[in-house]
Length: 76
Image 1 (cartoon, rainbow, N blue to C red):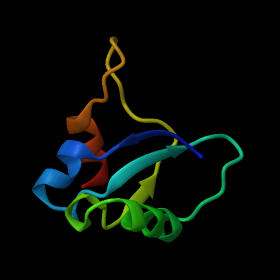
Image 2: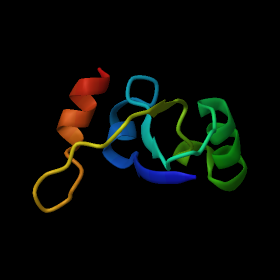
Image 3: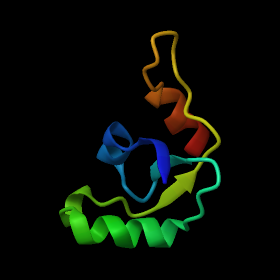
Image 4: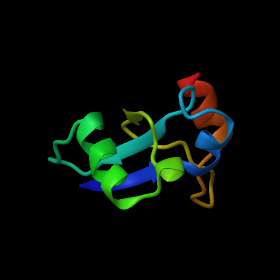
């Protein structure tokens, strides 16, 4: 269902301001509410993202690490 995601540092500052960024696999169909409900059943409340934003791709550097600052800036 999910190909890539980025949460960690994005949620540290403010869950309402920086939602979880998710890249879905091709052909997958899920809403943000469905994904949050699924995670709420399996994670502690403080680890569950409040919102989910679907993106086409996560920004990465040459070694494949997610560029969290660029991702945060694009969501702000």
